[in-house]
Structure formats: C-alpha cells, structure tokens
Amino acid sequence: MVLVDPAETALFAHTFRPRTRRRINGWRLGIQESGRLVSPLVGAGLFSLLGGGAVAALDAATFVAAAAATALLKSPPEQPRPSRARWRTEILAGVAHIRATPPLARILVVAALVMAVSGVGVAAQYSLVAGLHQPPSHLRVLTALLGAASVLASLVSPRVIARVGLDTLTLLGLVAFAGGSILRTLPWMPPVWFGSFLLGFALP
Image 1 (cartoon, rainbow, N blue to C red):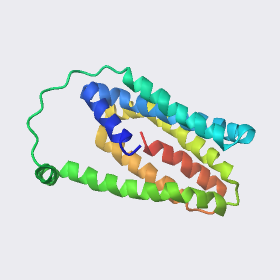
Image 2 (cartoon, rainbow, N blue to C red; image 1 turned 180 degrees about the vertical axis):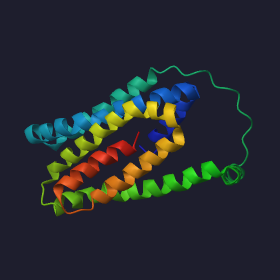
Image 3 (cartoon, helix red, strand yellow; image 1 turned 90 degrees about the vertical axis):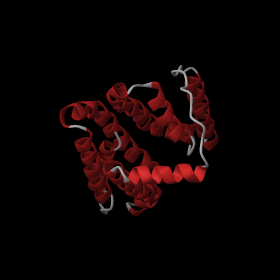
C-alpha cells in the first residue's frame, strides 16, 4: 500500500489534465470512500458467518480485482525523460524548489502534521472503542459514518473549488479534521459519532 498510493496519484496526474482532475478527483475519492459504507457490514457479516479466513480471502480478491482494472487503463504516451542526476542531487533540488515556493512549503508542513495526527488517530481508534465500553465490532459504525460523510463531501468539493478556490477547500478540510479529532477524544458516544462523521468531510 505504501507503493500503491503514490503510484495511483502519479498515474492519475499523468492520465488527466489539471482541470479534469479537479472536476473528478472528488468523485474518485467518493467512490473509494463508499467502500467504507459497504465493507464494514460485509466484513462483519462474513466474520460472523464464516470466520476471519473468509474476510481475508475477500480482502485479497479486492486487490486482484483492482489490479486487473488498473491494467485496463490506457494512459497517454510517456514523454522523453532527461537523463537522471544522482539521487542526492535530485533530493537537494527538490528541497530547494520547496523552499523557493512558499505555498508548496506550507502544504508540505501542514500535510505532514495532519498525516502524523491521523496515523495516531487510526491506531488509537481501537482504544477509543474499548474506552467507550463497546465491542470491537462497533468500529464498523464509526467507519460507516466516516465513509458517508466522505461521499457527501466528494459530491460538494468540486463546487466549492469552483466558487471559492482550492485554498478555502483545504482550510475547510483542516477545520473538519481538527474538529472531528477533538470530538473523538470525548468520553461520550454522540460526540464520537459526530466526530467520525466530521472527519469524513476532511478527506475529499
């Protein structure tokens, strides 16, 4: 997955023009996040009926199906690439470019912080469910709420970009992420549910 995510982003950028990407990226995320609505219910049902082996087999099958679908994509022909420099030279050139581009530097810092907090939040959700005295299966409720909000946000985000621009959309996403994370620290079920829903708006 560490390799798949950046490769998917690069393929998406290579295949579509910027204007097209802005229009359909929200839809792409919405389709992806709609799996959060379906998969917890299917996984829990299979786990109850057939055990963990069936869930693992279905999970593996989805990767095979995704790989087959990706193989059918037709991307534009590759442009001739200049000869590559040493990796150290390329990294230093990238750092210099980021430092010379303040908006890019801000995005890099903020995205790194958000990803760090998000990683902790994902790991802590098991303790969250235990702290609320709920069974592990209650995670499917939180995941479904997050997925539902992601689908809704993916439908709205292209319109937000068209009206107020990417910077405002990014700011709204950060506010939703912060608010959802804070609500999920409260020892009470309704704020945790709403926080999970709010977190879903942050992704698209």
